[in-house]
Image 1 (cartoon, helix red, strand yellow):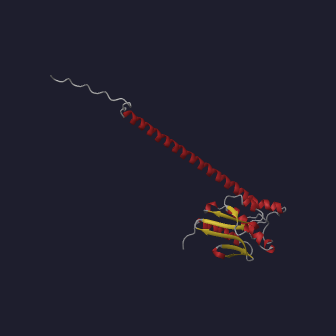
Image 2: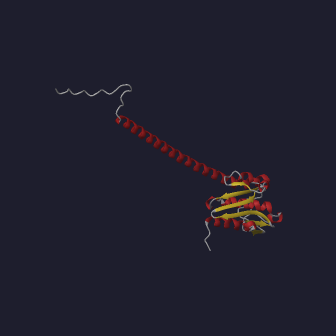
Image 3: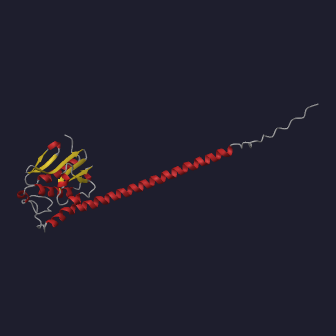
Length: 222
């Protein structure tokens, strides 16, 4: 059996987290991993080589999540219902704490109230009896702010990283363009110099309409 790659390991961590919720179970419709509660999906995940794709329902933090460069509204009309899909090319790009927060939000949006009531207060990183309960949320707005906070923090990091990469890329392009310009100028200078040298070596043609001076005739011997 081949060893798991890093992306599969990250998927396993997220799967274990999702399965820790009350009543959570696993299914594989269309070959995709679906984490369900009461036969309703709250998380889709697929791994293709090093790539990881996942979708979750984010009724509170959807707008903040969609500001990230790796997200988009989920297809098939699910985006209108608050579903967000994230695409990652490799394991190092996956912000695991953020995705865990998304799983928590999605589960609470899908699960029956009697199961949600078994969970600690919103914002706890890991569900289940081992978790320490946090203070009750001060209304729906406070709950939404807490849900969006890790997403906003991750967004700032991603934007900063993108800006840094873009700046380095621009610098490389500028350097390459400068070298190319210098090379073209140098080549042009060589051609101009060669043309001048060739012109200097070529004898001047006689002026049009004038014949070259005839050589003096030798005197006849008597």
